[in-house]
Length: 427
Image (tube, rainbow, N blue to C red; front, side, top):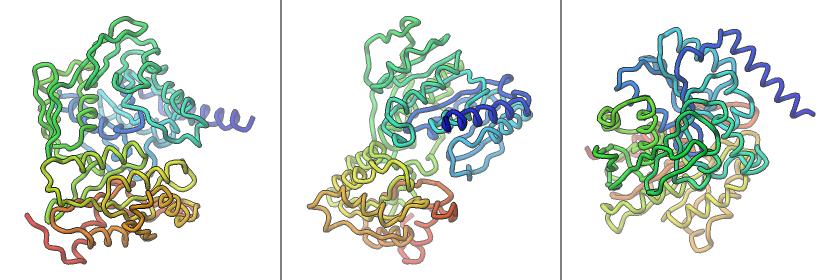
């Protein structure tokens, strides 16, 4: 009964907010991007594509809030802000004359009806991995929450055909479906018949870029990691769904040098320092695999990893898995604080440590202070090594007990500690 009352409260608050701001989403095209990994990156890339086509675009992701040429960091520590803010944001977007708005849609946001009374033209599915299981009760419930976005979007669905959960999302009726793949070559059938498939071919990872081809157009992006080929392909499909030619997609994407806090290279020499948001096992493994398999790195290169855990009180099952993954890829592991909220941070650290396989425990350090942990990693690094700092990316806060937030930015901390240590940076 309590859950029903809470859900009703969120629903009514969404309704009131939409009516108060005069249902602004009805007068523009709204694209919702959901999934577990890559949402923020896809929103950024797709925004660039639509702007390159000449559209006036707004976007809202965990990284930033953008309305046409105005841009600010998302300081909410919340990917999808509350109903009142969202509707006011959409009203501002409409008043600025934007034709498109892209919104990163989360399962928590859907549970709280933050997506309610927003007229989604397009729904985009990136991928699905276990996350927020304690909140939803099961993986199936988590997936079902994501599915509500596809029930709401009646015009276009953009779907990752390489994800094993895609059949669930293919079942929702819609006017048009576009699937993207890096491997699937078979015709894809949905309730509406054969859907259009966009395939990335000749996929190639280099030290500082990714290359692939879509139809007869070759793309050369200044991003790293095979998963960024998938993110770029998702954004290309969003562009295609809105009639954007591939040549324009290419021009927009090839201008991008990095995504804030997503495999972002903060220092290149004498050793490389990479900051990434990865905070679930699948994401962490992808990051480590990308950096470990760089075939242009010398065999003596060491990986020095600063790893935390998911926020206090949430998804405790992840913690030993993060430790286990770090122990498989990293030469030196430093387990540290992340966003403990009201949970004792040392307990979180110990649970991550439990997953570290025994033979690597002698190379593992537990350092409660995150700044000190980053400093230690930089002190350990030698020329040619790679320091990987995961869990927070470009997040602007660290959330601690009592609802308090400490200003934070892993990238800024790295630069400050490099300067304090007097480490000379090569050009």
